[in-house]
Picture (cartoon, rainbow, N blue to C red):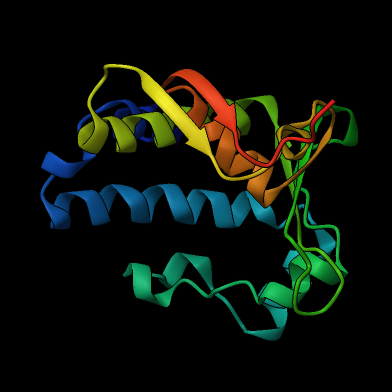
Length: 171
């Protein structure tokens, strides 16, 4: 089975009912394929080389190296063509003043939304309810760059029948 199909099975399925060992086996296959694809990015390829990462020898999820957070701040870690990028997610940059950047293409953006909905509906159900957001509407502005707060609000807004922002500016 293709890793795209495996991703869809996990995202759209009831992932909380998949036995842990089975889920780990599927995730390991997906992650190893992704690690190979990541090598098109020279910064990630360099990190793998410095860590002497041999993807073919990885047999457990725990053996997959974490990407240091500073790499997201200092380097372009995109693995798709620039014209495929539909959004850039930025962290708040609270600690260093420099945001981490995550580049999203359309497929990744859709999967991210599907995964959030699939996960949250297990807890919240499918009935939409009024939602109170303790932030301002401006944080959820339209455009290609979105901060972490805006991304979170957009993600959970699909569960809302109505949204009120308590920190909106009065007109």
